[in-house]
Length: 124
Image (cartoon, rainbow, N blue to C red; front, top):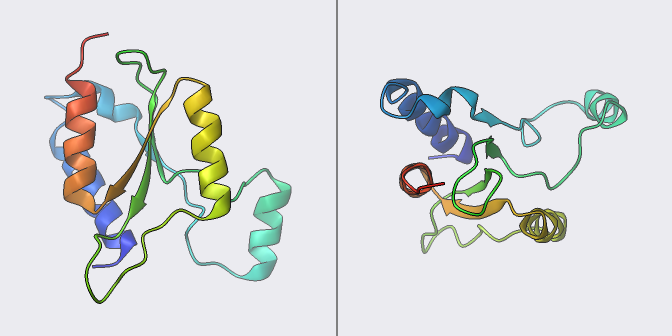
């Protein structure tokens, strides 16, 4: 599965679990990773798109955090050893952590869903 397919699975789960977790209505994805022309990418950058921003954000406070950011990676396999953060993604992770946001790197949709459920089940 591609990273995009994993992300689609996450949002399918979100739609089917809104009655259990109503806060999921406010979770959204950053479309930085979408493929587009260089010209359109330049236009989006002029409009404020930033490299390294995590893929998914849940703007719900829990525990000591203002919200949950998820950087989604494909599950690690022997044939696919990627899944490491780029320097810009590391910079964002460091910044968001200092601002009291939870930032988790999730490897596949199952990991992301478990992370979201765990986060939402915490008491404020």
